[in-house]
Structures are given as C-alpha cells and as structure tokens.
Image (cartoon, rainbow, N blue to C red; front, side, top):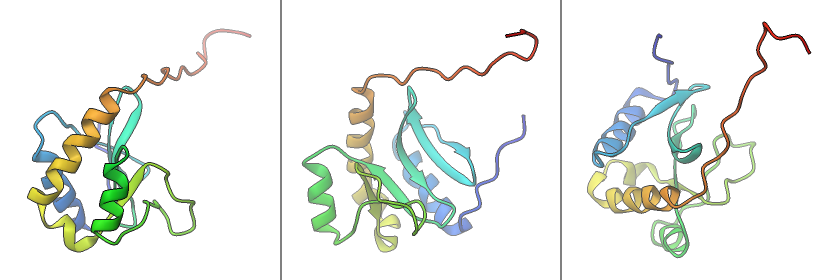
Length: 129
C-alpha cells in the first residue's frame, strides 16, 4: 500500500517527525493530509495540513503548557472549534525537541490509560441485508 501524503509544510513535518522519533515507542500514521499518532483509536498528537502541531495532555500538564508557552488549545483548521484536550505547539517550540519530549511522553502515558475505542467495521459488499 502506498504511503499517504502529508500536505503540511515539509520543514514542520520534519520537526514533527523528529519529535516523534524522540520517543521510541511512537509510530506515526497519516490521513486526510495530516500526520498523527494514536493508540487503541485514541489520538494523542497531530500535525494538521495547516502545519499546526497538537499534543493531547492531561491536567494539570495541559494548563501548565498553555500558560508556560502562551498558547491556545489546538485547532486543526482555523474555522474548527478547539480540541478540548490538545494544546497547540508554538512554532518556535517545535524546534526544541528536548523541551517537548517530556510532554510527548506524558501524552503517551495518558492515552495508554484510556479505554480503547471500538473498531469500526464496514459493511461487507458480499452480504445482502
């Protein structure tokens, strides 16, 4: 199967992938022009096609990150509502893998403790209703 294309700016995708590489247990996926990470159906990082990186964090890390880096909740698209548990990573911080790695590790631990989402099944074409 051909790898799906990520349409965000190449330099931001490279920085995002470098961040993911800082935690060996993480493997990225892609869909709809974005790269992301997920475990058991629970997404925990994403880079949107607009080049915005989001990391899912539990409290109190989420509030601390928002205040410390003067950022907002993640929006994959400017017209979308904010994702409640995701923080937007400021561009200048994306270059600082060492500063972000602890947040990425916290995000991974957080989603590993979540209930797996049920697998989606598609109807089979060869079965009549």
